[in-house]
Image (cartoon, rainbow, N blue to C red; front, side, top):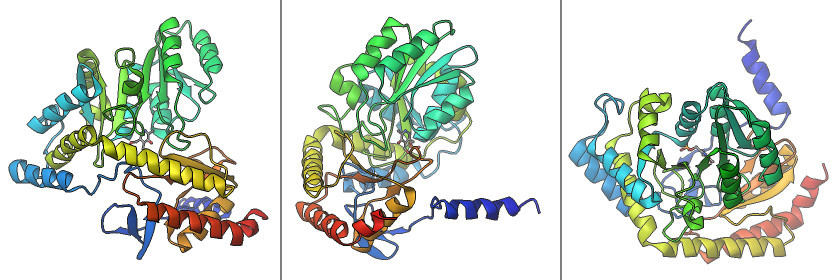
Length: 394
Ligand SMILES: Cc1ncc(COP(=O)(O)O)c(C=O)c1O
C-alpha cells in the first residue's frame, strides 16, 4: 500500500534514535515548567530575559484586544495593515537604528521570504554551514547558487566570494549568535569581506536580539555595524517573549519586500495582541538592562559550575550552552536522566545539528534563581557520578 511508507519512516526514526514526540507544558513559561505533569527547572527555552509571562506584555495584549479585537482579517496588502503594525515597525526601526522595519509572521517565514526575494538565478548566496533550517530553505527556494562556507571560517568565506565573482549579485547570510552552539559570528570581519567583494550582508539576530548590545538591540548594535549590514532579521518570539519576526534596514529594502516577498504578501497579518506584546517587550528590553546583567551572571555561574564538574561545553558567549555528547541515543539518555531528577535540558539531534554532534542545548534565563542553578548543578553532578558512565559505555 502506498501509505506504508509512513509507518516505515517512523520505524526507521525509532531505530536510529531520532524519533521525536511532543511534550506538554501546562501553565506559563517560567524558569520552572509544568512539563508532562511534573514541575521541572527549565533550561530549554529561548525566553532568555524571562518576559514571556511578564504582566506588562499580558496587559498590552489584553488592551489591544479590547481596542482592536482579535484577528487582523486579511494580509497586510489587503485590509490587514493595522495601526499597531505600523507602530511596531517604527519602534523596531528606532530600536535597530535603521531607516525602516517590516514585521513578518515568523522568523521562518522571514528567512525564506527575504532570501528568495533578494537572490535568484544567476546570484550567489554565501551561507555559514551552521545556519538555521529556515536560512537553508530560503537558499533553496531562491534558486541562487548557494556556497556553504565552513562555520565562521573567514578564509572559507573569502574563497567562496572569489568563486562567486561572476555572479550577478552576492549575498552573505549568517546568524549572529548560532542557535545550537551559542557562539558569535565574526561579524565585523564578515562585513569587511562583503565590502571588499561587493556583497550584501544579511544577519539573523534570532538569538542576539534582547540579549546583546547596551539597549538589547543585538550583536549588530553591540558592534556598531547597523549602517553596514543591509538586512537585519530577527524574531519577536525568543528574548522578546512574544511571537513573530521582523527585518530592519532601509526603506527601499522594506518596500521591495512589501512588493515581492511571497511569505510577507500571501499570509494573514499578525493579530493586534501580538503587535502590542512586541511593543511592550521592546520597552522592557530597553528600560531593564538589569535583565541582561542577571542573564550574564546566571550563564557564568552555570558554565563555571559545569566545567568544575568536568563537563565540556562548546565555545559560547551567549545564554546557549552546548554540551556535546555525540551519539544521539546517548544524548537523549543523558537528557532523560536529568529530567527524571527535575532538570529539563533538551537533547538536540540530527537533522537539527550535524551527525555525531548531538548535544544538550542548555539555555539560561535572566529569571533563574541561584537556588535553581545550584540545584541543577547538583543534579548534573549526581547524573555524572551515577548514570553517565553507564550511558557513555554503550
Ligand atoms: C536562528 C533562527 N532563525 C530563525 C528562527 C525561526 O524563528 P521563528 O521561531 O520566529 O519562526 C529560529 C528559531 O526557531 C532560529 O533559531
